[in-house]
Amino acid sequence: MSRAVLDASAILALIFDEPGAEHLTDDVMEWAVASTVNRAEVQAKLIQKGYSPDEAWSDVQELVSDEPYTAEQAKIAGTLIQQTARYGLSLGDRSCLALAIVLKAPVYTTEQIWKNVQVGVPIHVIR
Image 1 (cartoon, helix red, strand yellow):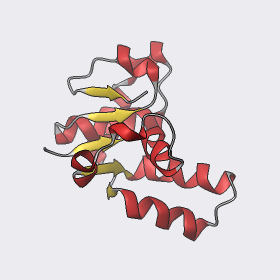
Image 2 (cartoon, helix red, strand yellow):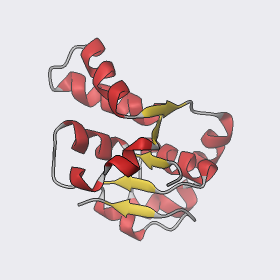
Image 3 (cartoon, one colour):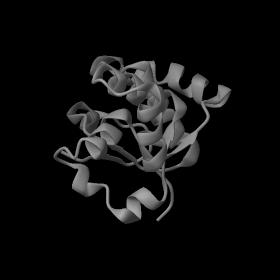
């Protein structure tokens, strides 16, 4: 398998062993990456749930490698507003998709609305 991009919701599903996490198999996770923007989202959610900042960062670090947010990704994420505004995708969502576009990799998410999004990469909604 080539690389796979996880959005924040997929990472959180793994951490909390939520429905859909079983679709993130060892084969997927071996090549999984996340945008640093999505890592920040997960960090914030975990801290809101009572994790210490270091514990939150460590938990994510163990699960998935990070990919720095580049100027190219920023441009793509900004441009994606044209295709995704009607679905209400956030900057974090579009940043995840931008990374997948750059890497030409599939995306994994729990967000049902993403089933409607067409941006040239496979989108796997895991629940």
